[in-house]
Length: 461
Image 1 (cartoon, rainbow, N blue to C red):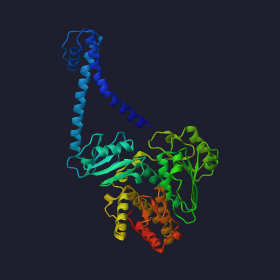
Image 2 (image 1 turned 180 degrees about the vertical axis):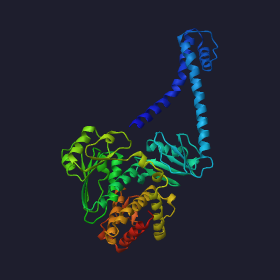
Image 3 (image 1 turned 135 degrees about the vertical axis):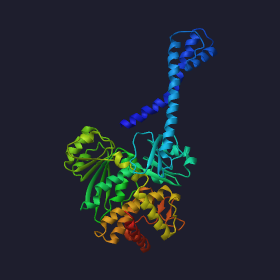
Image 4 (image 1 turned 90 degrees about the vertical axis):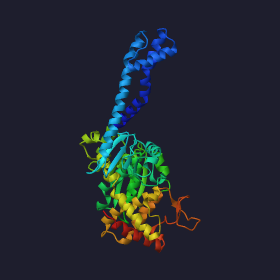
């Protein structure tokens, strides 16, 4: 919250600077006109004050103010120019001859945790073509895409990483050597891997997800795709959110097993009864201290995961109950998550396997955002499958993989349908003929699911 306020203040100052720079000219011109000068002469005399070069002997308080403030503006402009040149020189020297050089564009004050041997610069919104790789991570998706579009030519032969928070991958049409870093998806993945419901030794869970933000949406969708570990499981996801768009977007979502997705408004009295029986509570919205305290009292020893990107917020000092922070920037904004993500490497390897088997597109950079996300989801689920190996039969794992795939498709707004072109899917109508129960699949399709789990289990860790 503090960094966000700082960003707003810095933005306001930048907008006001041109007006402040012209203020001495306006004041000085006014003073000279009052003293009897013609407007054109008054304007020239006021401009001369910027360079401590008065051309008129006229005097009043307006002129005196301009006489002092004008040179200050000039000195500030010179210092800013020198600082800009010096910073650019430092950046060039820092990256000169480096094998791994990165420019991080951002309007925030967070830093990415890079490993050894990486030289990084943070030039704000100033494009630095001499960096070998470029990470674009402004405060909102629109800024990121605008920056990329403005510098598309300079980035055409570079590795580019674009951060997103609000836009879903399936809506993005970005091809080329571009990697999308989905911030909220990364937070959700790290969270569910830490929780690991599939390692708890039980099949039934009541999970509370409190929040109507984009992060909440990613926590829901990522949980639905990772938390698949038994034919007998029954996970009830109780979503407490005043965001009605969730229900609209998930209106045709089918979970394909006994799991449930239940919605409540935050003012619904039934919420507190559900919370008191929860096995797990995830809070992704900023809550008032009184609400948080009430939740802690109601759940007792049940684990509460609270979104806390910065050290020093209320959760850092909260001692009652079993509250754990998640989403800390130092954990999320790492080189492994953004550039060298093992998940992306596994997704690329998985796509290569499928391309060899089925003759699909092998070039990762040519894939749409939807197909990249599909490979990422499948390879991510491979970690769960490895944990299930020896605990669940291959056929059961194949069924779970099919359920995960169906959920991915439904979450990306596909529905069951038989395309008129005789193929399995129609990407324009967003329909697929295999969005059915595993038992109803053709033997060939079941065989594909068996092959899928063997491939994903074998992907490098």
